[in-house]
Amino acid sequence: MLANTLHRPRSWQRATGAGEKLRARAWRVALLALGSSLVLALSAGDALAGQLPVSLGKAGSFAALAGSTVTSTGLTTLNGDLGVSPGSSLTGFPPGRVNGTVHATDPTAAQAQADLTAAYNDAAGRQPPQALPADIGGRTLVPGVYKTGATPALRVTGTLTLDGQGDPNAVFVLQVGSTLSTAVNSHVNLIGGAKPGNVFWQIGSSATLGTSSTFAGSILALTSISIDSGVTLNGRALARNGAVTLIDDTINVPTLTPPPPPPPGGGSTGGGAAVRPAEAAVRRAEAAVRRAAVRRAEAAAARPGSASQVMHRPLRQTGTRPQVRSYFSLARGRASAQASSGSAGVRRRARRATP
Image 1 (cartoon, rainbow, N blue to C red):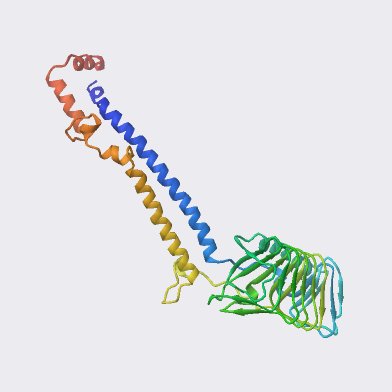
Image 2 (cartoon, rainbow, N blue to C red; image 1 turned 90 degrees about the horizontal axis):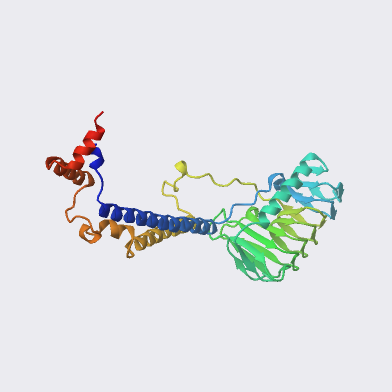
């Protein structure tokens, strides 16, 4: 059949085939580079955007929650719930005062302990952590995740400052490998919009707060929590397995505030509202990653032998006809020339195609 004569020149096929292979190779390189860049962007974005608060679930309403017993001496005041589970011993209330609900080995306390376990594991797994020295007194920390290093115990002497840097949703997660202890008259000071409800201390063993100290944040201890006399804790004392011991102390449960809703349409905050510094940093990082991916793709295409160079090289260099024609125009011209010259090959193919 005449249609069988519409074939590409071998030189065209060789050039086009090589070009297609190189084009596909260049696209694979570009896509791999872009994928790697997007992974880096997401990781960088997570780090820059800060942490979400650790969800405490039912445990969030408790000023003191223990696994075995809660013992109070003197006029302790709990501005929040008091609970114990699976133990059942609550001692010293009264004269200790509970401005909340007491839950002793009931379903609420059991659920609070389950939620505490989940919160503890969440806080312990937060990434990426920054290393903490053995004593963080006199230091200022910005929002993020922190972890004890070679010395798993952590101590606070003097004043520790947590600076929210103007972000009311700033979150601090401190991962302590073994014990936490604070010195007498030590302080945890919150500035720059930092809130005690967004500070979480994950303690791998037990915590001890020194006499007349002021502490901020929720203590999530694997074993026990001992609070010496005259301590003010703006947060929570939550012990998974052991006891909570109190002496004339005051614990104020932070107000539970939900996270801010996303802006309408999922876009940036409108109406002239200020964009959070962390969000602006994420946007800059993403833009930089996109620019880098484009540059890598362009560089890959510009290398000798790349797909773009083969496909845009003059036809004479690839061994094809010097005339620049489309494939169909070239094929039609070849068929017309063969038919007009009475090619024997065309006549034979025509006879074979005739029934």
